[in-house]
Image (cartoon, rainbow, N blue to C red; front, side, top):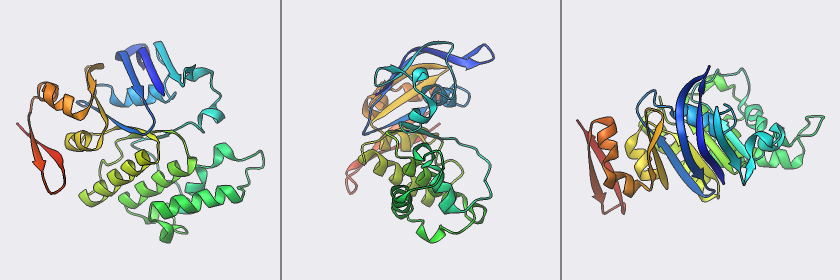
Length: 254
């Protein structure tokens, strides 16, 4: 379990998130939602050791995350940022980057590393792109490659910063299905997401932030019932049950 206790963090002495108390468990999806500038990405970076808090504790299985060496931590958690440069690299070699925490001094992949990469390519359905340069792929295809790299890294905790942003609806749904599969594999997926309907329909827990503080951290049903989303975003939210799919969808209006 990753736990944040009384965490305050930000940049250059300016607080962005304040008094955060959250925990993330394996085998679950947690969505972090809130208006632009409320601290969602800051929270994600703080929970994954990319940003050191001003105060409070971040622990992994009871150990202070800052006392865990970087190489060892890279076997426990992975982070996929929202924006990144597209490197001049083949799909296969990028996915192999996920195995770097496990390689020895020689940095030569062993049979097991190659097998894990092959499995990641297969699971994401991108074997046919293995020799292609990343620059040759569409945005949705590249996102699958990055998720394959994360899968090859084989961590229990996966942090995703807006994994579906800028993708068309087909690729959005594909990425969300992949995220659900990661959960089914027993991993904890913690993601920042702007699509409120996806947050409520795909997650086990939702964290609603406002002005750097947690408004509510609970199940999607409890989040909807609280009406806090309506207040924070100044919208109306209606639940629509789809009998054919056996689940609810959420419709937002002004």
